[in-house]
Image (cartoon, rainbow, N blue to C red; front, top):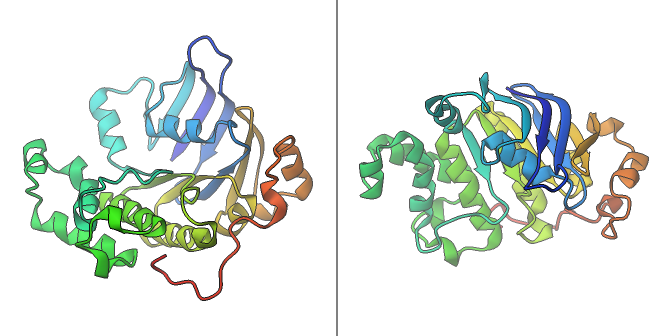
Length: 265
C-alpha cells in the first residue's frame, strides 16, 4: 500500500523536517503516528497524500511512485486517498449533504460539480455516508450550526463518500472536546474496518493510539524512533519520545471517555 525509502523533506535551506530510511504500511493496516509537536507527523501524511514534494527519496502509494509518476497516474491514486483534516475544512455555509457531496468531486465532471448537478448515484453514496456517521437528522443543516464533534463527523462522511482505499487522518480529534475524542476515533476505526481501507492517523495522545491502532510509529525530529504493536510500546519509549514536552500526553488523561455520551457529539 505505502512504501517509503530514503525520504527527506525540507523547506528551503532549513534542515530536513522528515528523514525516513524505510517505512512500509500494508493494505488494511490501522496505524497511528505519534510524537511531540513538530515531530513531522503532519508532514508525513501530507507527503503520502502528495501535497508535499520530498527533496529526495521514494514515496510509493498503491504501486505508484509519486516522485516519477505522470500527472494522470498521480490524480488517479489521489482520488483513492481520503484525508480527514485537523480543522474540518468544511464549507461553513453549505449543508451536511452538500459538504459530503464534495467527496464525489473526484469522479464527477467539473462542469456538473460547479453547477451542483450530482448524479443520483452520487447522492445515494453521500446519503449512505451520512447515515453511517450518525447524522441522518442533520442532513439539511448548515455545517456551521453543528458542534465540533458533529462537524468532524461530516468530514469523515465526506471521506466515506470518496470511497477511498487509503484514509489519512491528521490529528482528527485535536479540534474537538477531548471528552468526545474516543467516539470519533471509534467511528473512524469502524469506517476503516467496514470499508476494508488502510488507515494512517497522526495523534498526539499515545493512550488513544494504543486503543485504536494496531501499530504505532513514534516520530521525533522527523525520524522514526520506534515502530511496533501497541502492547510493546512501553512507558520508557513514550518518555523518551516526548522528552522535553511539558504536556506529557502519555499520562492517560487525554481521550478519557465521558459517561452518558451520545454518538452525535
